[in-house]
Length: 259
Image (cartoon, rainbow, N blue to C red; front, side):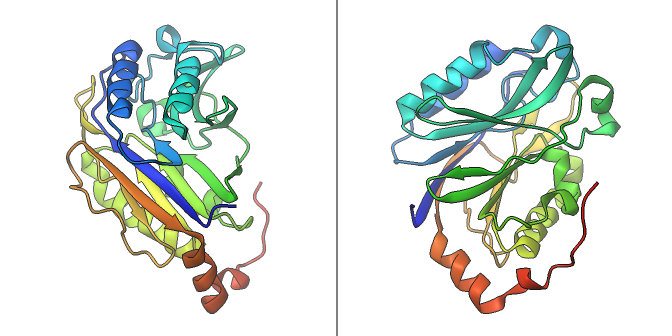
């Protein structure tokens, strides 16, 4: 078990509906990393931007982006996580991929499809949580709109880190800031949100605000919210255990089941 977990946040613009250009761009950023890390975070739909044009852009799990992630994870000697459009049988999903240095891939399909953009008409929603055990850390990965639904993120399995990959627009960025902090506090876990910047093909503006909060809701990330950046942050298992042991808020959770 590692008492510390080193996380790298890459907040970037995205090339609209251009997987090859985005893979090349992120490869360049990954080659520039000069600090050892355990986990590298990329945004939601990092190969395309948040598009409903699934049919011509979807890949399979045997496609180029999964292979690219496996190669980059090997090269960086770290796990890499982000979401992409995947064709699964006769359906399309917004699928988060967690790829380790050894090539192992774990997946989570976005539970809450964004009805305001018609995502529910294009992508099939997921039905299962993913809890990742990585270097002795329990990680719960979720996607963008999931952030608005605290029951889905409820910490009933004592995870250590809650991570949201997103394309969250400027016009609702105040909600992003508030909800990330709230998810950290209520779950007594580190909470990380990785967003994008720039304009997409629909004219929506993104201003980032990628951030990492500790179990008390203190923001640990210090980079400029609204520009491209790469930031390395170290998470401490001692911080989690000390505060949970002292405060014991999770022991007072209401008992109910989710259907």
